[in-house]
Image (cartoon, rainbow over all chains, first blue to last red; front, side, top):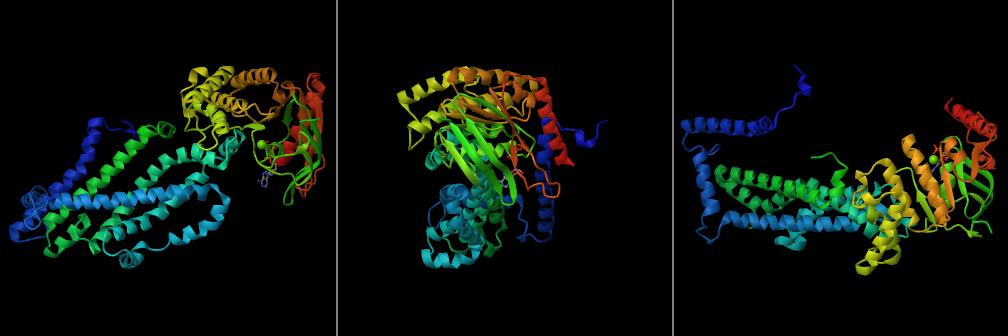
Length: 274
Length: 261
Ligand SMILES: Nc1ncnc2c1ncn2[C@@H]1O[C@H](COP(=O)(O)OP(=O)(O)OP(=O)(O)O)[C@@H](O)[C@H]1O
Ligand SMILES: [Mg+2]
């Protein structure tokens, strides 16, 4: 018999083991919910599977009586627009600032203390300012994501740029590169996959800011909906929404990873094969 | 006129005197090897020629003019590691030198110019024996192949002097013998001037045309940084005398033992 640390599950076993905790949670939930509902049929805390199905059908597959629109689709679309725009702006800013900060000593001396100080500002604390400046519209919510996420990405990218071996930068100069052409041909291409990594890493933070902003001021969106129905203790809506958000977060992470592997084969070749 | 002319050159890092009173003339076409105990300033010397470091004092001329104080195309470099670009394949790595020169804004060539650059790069890859790996990425190459690539990258620029800092130090003995043959061959065919730092006295003694030994002549055990290294041997390679080899070997080893103690 091998030691436990040397035993490896087969593929089938691994999949089963991976699903097991999810299955256990569901079973546990069903039991707990049944027990509570048996005692009090009007209990709202742990709705039955049946009420979930009803709620999902109501939110996702029928049009709202009031506006004639599909609330679930509408919420998802608005949230993803905000998230996508916020993350896209942040990533662009990260490239525009991270590369000069990491490469050019003059920029570093001039801006590093500022970026370090700025990244210490708690974004939620300046949310009121954003609402005052940008109004309650889309701008404020996107701005919150940008302000919350950009400093993280900038500092990450700056770090990655400064990790490029000095030998490479000197070699590029002996090959006739100027500061600009070295940025374009050596630094930027090496930073793109690392930028995608940074996006994956900060996506969780971006979701936090998105939902916070929607909870406070919005008229649609996944975060808005959860906080709206909270008033009626509608667990039957909240839980599917949470599961949906989790699934979306997981999906984006997975897609970004696959995309990076496909686009930058040289980047992943050096790492272990996954 | 000498290609490199050095008079009374000092290099210090704060209190630490690394090189003192160096005098040296290097002519075009020479193949100098540089040996010396670890930490005596061989890499520092190479960095000054490269423009990555500046001398503290002294005359330091390249073709009769002061050295450019940053790396440039006249001086090619091959480091022990990390001098190929991991995001470009082998062919693109060699093309880069041509592209950076011809395209000042994008650093990239297209169309006919690109074809031309590909052809030149391919010829260079053939010369270093890498043609069959032209479309591989550096991570797929062995250490010896990466060093061949780094040499090809530099040679495509036709530098006035090629600097090598322990280029074969990390390779297996068998592979580094192949590399010796290659570098000698390239040196002869391309009329290169080469300065190569090595840890291996045997390599230095038999490769090239001239052997330079850096070593500290004076030594203060209380203050090891007080005195810098000088050139203790400057001999033409060719009169390969066993006695000289032993003498140098002993002096370098002594120093290294002192440092460890
Ligand atoms: N940037 C630096 N700042 C301060 N001291 C330095 C710097 N670079 C090198 N030195 C010092 O200069 C001396 C010579 O270093 P150098 O790297 O040139 O030695 P070397 O002969 O190449 O050694 P090795 O054979 O181990 O590569 C060492 O004492 C080192 O500590
Ligand atoms: Mg060295």
